[in-house]
Image (cartoon, rainbow, N blue to C red; front, top):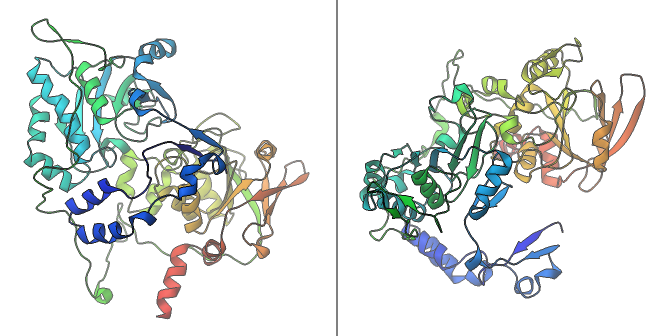
Length: 503
């Protein structure tokens, strides 16, 4: 089954804490309905009783023995216990001075997360300490921001010199004005965001970003040292005394309840038939979207290879964030960042691919635009776990908009694979992963078997090489009947639009 399970408390799924949260956030009716059927909102009893029968591997973790970890740099998959960080930093020559600690954004920014972090922030003044790093807080919502301001948390952070950002994605996707990032100096930051790929936070490929819990990030920002272990180590206060941080503590839910004056929600018009969306044709930030074309009803022949991506190719590599997000309402403009972070297998460079029409190398978006202008469709080839990272739809919309028809990889990150399907793209995987090595730089590629496109049935890919030879490989897909209809219609929205027009 290709899955692993970790032992947890007695139940998965809906539990009492979720019920409490729903009630605390004004959704008592939902909680009461769920409470009545909570025995069904969990895993199957036989799976709990004999998990080894249903999973390839069962991992048991004793949470009382689990110490804080730091994940990174450049991937959330590299985990290091805090007690081993000094050793690992020395071995890998990681800068140990923490320049910035950042908590919040959409991840790890609940009331409980912030309250546990503020319990450490309070100790800065109480114990005569000073922040050794920049420290920023990004509340996850206006409701959280308003509530933690009411409860004095924001004052506590600001009193020790921390900066509170607006409730938004913020630094997690590079939306902050980090002074000096343009110098591209090697440095270390620590944050509680769930992604830490190269260049994501500040555009600097030499920023080593480590992921940790909000309370560990806070402790490291206080110490200013990546190797500081708050469980065992001490700090020197303004009196020259050795002091130790007390363990963090916080409330699961605010004792006074959540509060907010304006949650930011604006209800749609009850009758939208008279609403006109008027966007200037020369706008650089906004652009009306038009339906993608439906499938032609034939096999896809004569596709040019746009890029054969090597190694990790996340949604950040496919559609970078940061300053590009000002164009997120303008599909054509934001498409100028398409795949500019992907490493070209054939020259080991980023944003440099061969234009088969001219024989010249150039940026990926410009090359693809040249293909589109010539009426030539293309294909992208990728490695393992293609599309890992944020679930941003632009990573699927941009290639579709510029004329890429197929993405063929060793394996997909699940959400990106689904996003490609929704946009009417063909998301395929090598039946034999070794066939990735057969893709040549000047290949023209055909996709055969589409007239009989059905769930579970392989398609054929013909690789037409520059020397006149060709070879056929088998590829897999995970499309169900509904998703095949998305492909045929040119995208899921086209199917939805068609259904609404019938009513």
